[in-house]
Image (cartoon, rainbow, N blue to C red; front, side, top):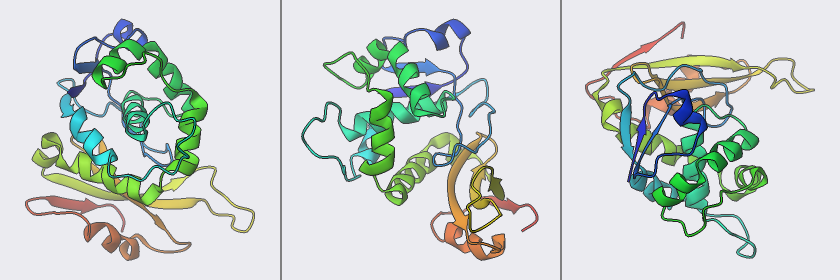
Length: 224
């Protein structure tokens, strides 16, 4: 099973997903935890293909915090649909649910599901809120995207810090900051770490650097 993150026509984007193992969808990628990434295409016009089975294998390592009773969809299925919807520009549970509903038949075939109905928006909210550990999820996402040939072929990786709007708390007037490892050539954010209040990027950078293999890469940073 493979997923082709490539630019397609509006008709394809708004209609059901193709009935083949390779789903051709418009690819966008934002920060997986905050929705604060860019809104540019995740890849060039040529796109890139990734193995959905490999993504499933990564998500199968995650512990499902939901109770067994009442579960209609496995954690792996829900997370894979969320990632594909995210790559296509959906930022909210409602948007993800609607995107999946319009492509239910193709997604069911792609993921070998008996049911051709997709999860409700509430299901995505519950999974994100209670079913998974954010750190474990981010580790598997990073491992998966880092393994993609298109990402590995890019020699230039970059580190950059971003302020997340709307995260001001009552006790602190400043917004939260994240330091991310980004691959500009394919527009993929590999990982992000939160920076403590008044912490500089140089202090947070080692948390990222110790988790990635930079052999053969040129790493740049802006105003560290």
